Image 1 (cartoon, rainbow, N blue to C red):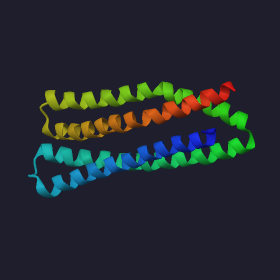
Image 2: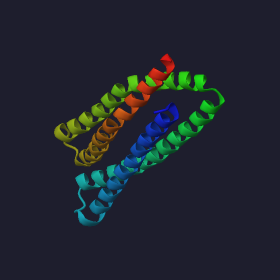
Image 3: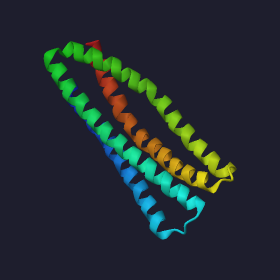
Image 4: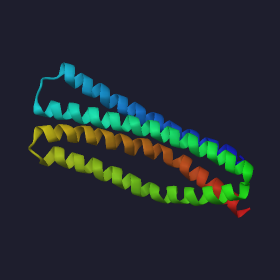
Length: 167
């Protein structure tokens, strides 16, 4: 596979991550709607509704932004490759090494937020805050899963760049 095909495969996989962020956000918005119309008005339900609404909107915005970011990477990468393939490979290799090395850090941050939300659910006695924590737990657990499936594309593209840079 040539390096432009590898770039396209990587950015396609990352765009799919952005689409999954949007889907996760839509699920959270639907959850907020269901709670608004079908659940008794309690502090727990209100916290869940507002938490789902806010996190849903934010992750949808994040998904759209992430998709646009990957479109930009693909367009700029192709342009740089056509201009100077050696510079493209070196620049992308450095960038992707950082992305690959930073992946675990991002996953740990997501896990920390999810565990923190679960701790709030278990140990706090404020129903409204617990409701928000439920929404946050759903968000960050979803992010952990979505990002976990994206890691193979990161590793594959990084490896392709590593091999190209050694030639």
